[in-house]
Length: 322
Image 1 (cartoon, rainbow, N blue to C red):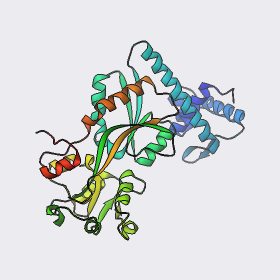
Image 2: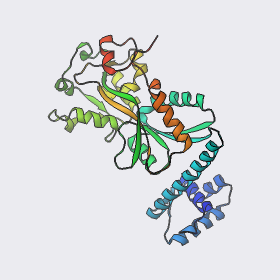
Image 3: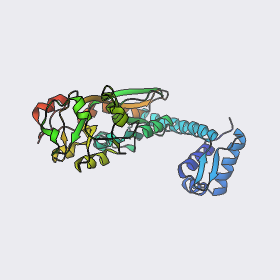
Image 4: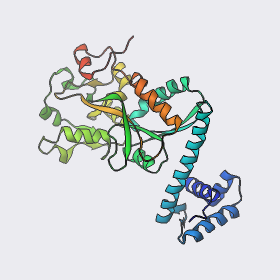
């Protein structure tokens, strides 16, 4: 294994990314036979096949996945070394691979824009996915930092809190419960819910909320795959939803959704910046972490001023200025 070269590892990464020998060759400016030879050399060195040849392209074997994980680690360490050398010379340059759960996409772009205003020479590559996808990206070192709620427990991570994350129940403006205050948990449980997929952070919080309501977890609601689909379905009158308050800023302003006044709501969670604790943070990662801790909360969506004043305070959020 000591004879594996950086050139061979780069070839493996290109095959993983493109799925085809020819496309990997094009991406590296090499020929197909050259890529095939490098793959054969590393397979001979290890003694196992690293990819299965399928009609849909090259698929990593179990051994291939292990080698690719090591290749990603080597690539990230070399990139971190480059950034460290740049930082030592006094510059703030480099690339940050940022991941964010889908709920965070409603504020992450404005956060990136604010960060790059102060750090114009730092490029950010953004990956958006559901909770499982972003954790998997972090596990395989495809991202440096993930913006998410509850940090994963099956990876050794370092997490920094940068803001509050209220979760609320929303309904269309003409729903009978919009004018009622202090709605009980039992009464709201009788409503038809539209919910995220199993395993999502929002879904998990709703399951905890309804855990003591008999039978509710057996029929939690109609599952939908994204916040956007859920919002559109609620506005169409198909049900109510438990959702992040940070995803409904525009709909509240436009009067297309209303937050219901339910006992025990909002549920307060937090936003975290999460990175692997088994890797040395690059200078770019440290700069971004410091920015989030110092200013990240500024760029979270706010509850509109038009929302009933007696309920705004319960969110711990300053009303939006008009």
